[in-house]
Image (cartoon, rainbow, N blue to C red; front, side, top):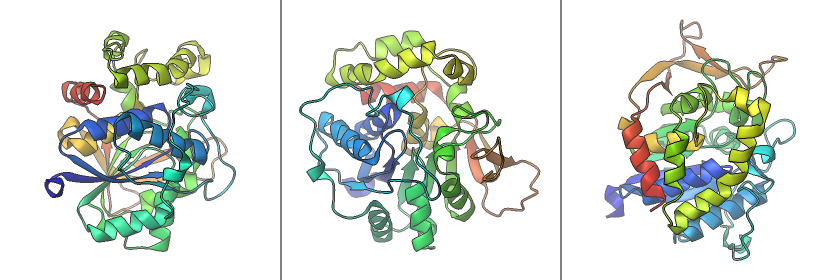
Length: 322
């Protein structure tokens, strides 16, 4: 019964790794997805909405409601990751049979988040794999929103000041530092964070990736096609090579946050500390700050992922392409 399953809401800026994370959640038998909310990030908001629908159609799950959210950050202009994900966010692979945007719900994503969470207080885990704009707007329009969540799982930020977009900025936090600041300082629920460095340290070998996408299933073929652009870019772009901490390998960043939401035992170690985001630094805007000496005196400590059960993680990845 769905009532006995873990209840999830997923907030995405659907690029390639968001797509994989959604597929992972759909494949997990213990998960019930109540909705997917979209935010501008890896690509334009329209593309994000289209991409989510493409993934849901592939998985025969167009019954999952999809909501359009924020189309720009709280301050400043939107940035995209089209160099890595392709201009459409999914590797620029044509899909003439993609579902139309008429399938997107009329309700605004932020309103949907608040409504659904209020209906299931302290039962829903929220997974955020893009800029945190929708979440910041939710708490700023309903201060009780975070306390109604069971848990929050974020892919974003950094733990060693290493950036993948600027010298110290990870893309999701850099795309809307103000939103990240609001979420990290105003969300009171249990919060896990999969940082850029964490996903890199627990990357998968290329040999594993090659067999993973060569299974001959529709889902594996889809993953292989949408990742082709980003893999070519990451293997040939000097900046991308330098940003990839810990040597070569396959990294599906958002999948680590999703895996933790599906099965918390995939996380084998955490750093529990107060966190915030630098908003003003000339070189450090968007950088996540770990308060390891408790100088901020924050009551709500985040759980920074610092260990991954790779066998359990691989099993979730493999199930997603069957």
